[in-house]
Image (cartoon, rainbow, N blue to C red; front, top):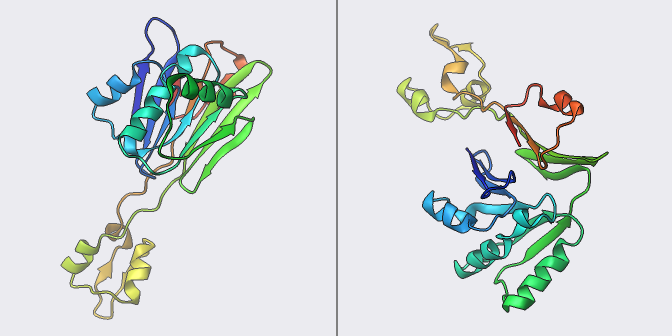
Length: 219
């Protein structure tokens, strides 16, 4: 699921990726007022694992302290990973001191560099910052379908070595001549997706090479 929200009268964009394949929420940018938006749309912020701040533009981080403070008030204890440019840690420390705020959980801050920044078993996020071009590529991996145990039971099949064969979608013939179509015992595969996100508003012809075959373009 993809949620997007324009930030006031600017062209900056903030969006969340609710990656159902990993049950994680990744947030790009934190504009002021984001908390109200999440409450109004019943977004489970406890699933938020990663926040990515593309740059130190005030529209991208004005709501950062509010989100982090809200998570602390909600009793969060799980660590959170924050990705951003150099100076983000200084900004956050200043905001915490100015507002006398502390968090009840650990915030790990990672500096953004071009290349693979997040390598999760089920998805990857790349960041490119070269020649005045700045963008992200989000890839979710294709996942195999799951074995439908109820269908096996309906065919009077019980746990046995046959299950491992059917789980692979392989068809087989039983001694009594009954044909079992393995593909019918496995749910549909989750097709991997590709998102391409511009973190600025400047177009470059080189973007075309990355836009092709993308599931969705964000800018």
